[in-house]
Length: 202
Image (tube, rainbow, N blue to C red; front, side):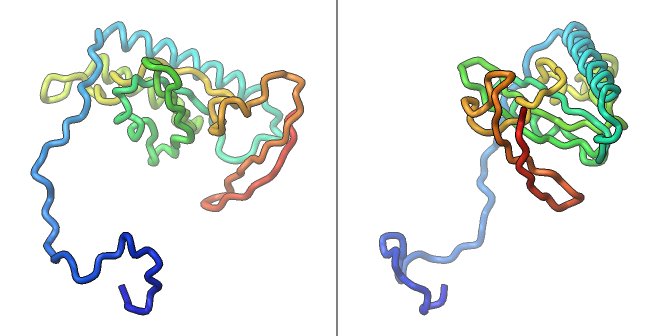
């Protein structure tokens, strides 16, 4: 740092102290939490049912939309529960090649409660999770483990997301009554840029 920078934090500025060393990677192993113990067939069946129900609800929701108001990439949002030990799967929930995006993560509010993640799924990728679960159920890796186990075994259940799923402010700020009028600031994406608009919620 140049000498002409202000030294107004003397309690953290060390003069004429320390030596320079080349960086060395710490010699330690980082162990990920073990995968949940699952009955492969029953877990795959439960996930398949919840995913199919969520996707069917999404299709009905999309069909009911006003076509004059439907703009942007056609798709829907799913809400996925993961156990606390399954945090490592958050990065695996979305696939950029499929234009999927992890848009919100809600930390558990009580011990033992799940992490809840919301993912945007384009209609073109609506079978993404079903294919993952089918491979987990039917295909083994070269090591004899279920295909996609690091992701699928950590998924508890899947459902269609709601506005509350995407709400990341304090829970007390979410409107409670159906007829309550509030002002929300909604961020809209236009390509790589984002613009904001403040809209009333009836």
